[in-house]
Amino acid sequence: MRNALYDYNSKHSIQLEYLKNKYKDNQLWHELKETAKKLKSYNLTYIIKRVKANFKTYFTNLELYKQNPNLFTGIPKPPKPKKLYKITDYSVELDKYTSLSFARLEKENLIGINLSNSMIYTHLDKRQVEKLTEISKLYSARLVYDNGDLYLQISYLKNIPPSTSHVSRKYASIDIGINNLMAVFVDDETTPSLIVDGKRI
Image (cartoon, rainbow, N blue to C red):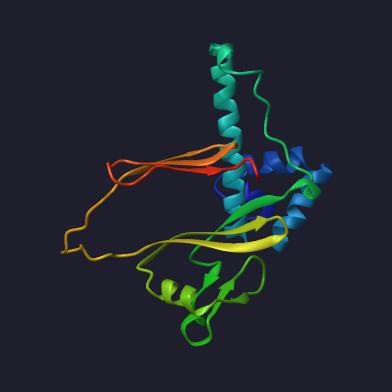
């Protein structure tokens, strides 16, 4: 798919020719190719993977439906695109090696994000910089759109030395609801349970 959108040469030439010939007069295909030009190929790859995963789930559910329709409230429907004005939240997985830059992090408190043809730098506060400079290994990164705001979400692995002191532990469980916004039960004989009233909210 990526090779077809960017007109790359590939060993899968039969599939490439099939896509090019099948959709040569398709407006949506040409719009997709224009969008692909604006995005780096390594960023687009993650979006293609997400669409592929959505369709894989759809076909899996369709097979389950054929075997046992009682598991579903209706026949599974294929994934379809949302209209942009209806999207309130979305996230795009970033290539952690090529879409992010930490070169100006320690001296200028800046982190770089590259979605297209240039690196865009955003300022971080001191606490965030301290956390990022302690990263042992970057695990994943994504750009999150949420109701008009953009967030950079980073997951990382950090080596934590084993603790030598004895740490006492308590176990708790949380049940999320509406009337009772949150019910917390702590598994010991001294800590009282807690219920947060959600009716007012």
